[in-house]
Length: 291
Ligand code: GUN
Image (tube, rainbow, N blue to C red; front, top):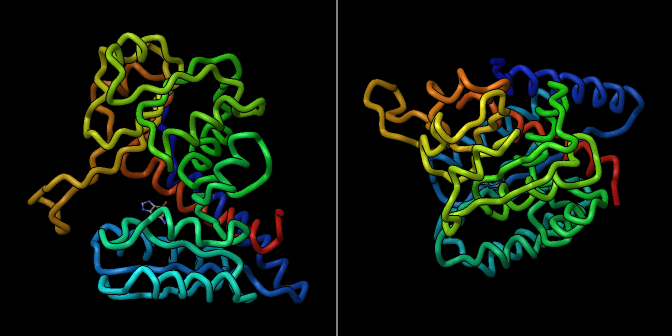
């Protein structure tokens, strides 16, 4: 069994990006500039955005954090998005989700200029990804593909089972794994809350991507010996022994599943750091221009 070390791999990729940015600046060009909009004071969102700002520093990017109270109206938020769309100094920006209930997330996502949509959530980028065209790939799925690639995990002809059908992980990772590409070329099955025989399907999998948000869902008796297991779960579970008062819990029963696997990602330190790294890669691409 080998642990897929997302933290180490992400640090390597960020160092590669930093080197490229250093050269850019030495050549007289400006560095990439990422902006992030944070609405309200959600603890998880605060942590994620702080990690993104820190990653920008590590890569030599400029970053701007725009904070708004959770009372901001949808109209006001749309006008802030327009300003970022029109600002030539900003290469890409993200709006940290979730947003307050009175704001329509889909409307906000579609208001972002797809050429600056470094989260890869705009329907244009989702569509381009699904038909194999260049575009901004959603960060978590792109990070998983990079992790498989960096560890030279064979994917061609393999059966990949995706647990979960969210727009930001399940659907795009299923799409990327089925593309005629390396990594890719998988036969993909997507399981979700209405799938009756998940255990039987998982037992046929060479690669399992667990992205349901259900802590410890994938048990050892659902995994074929020698499988590769990627855990996307990051549920906050109360834990009084931690200073923060919680710990991150993956969708995989790690202690019992890991001994059966050829490769497995830990939580934390697996997919999470790779996700932020993909955002940095997308921002660099935005700076260089991909459309
Ligand atoms: N909330 C949870 N994950 C993400 C993400 O990848 N991007 C944004 N913008 N919000 C999120």
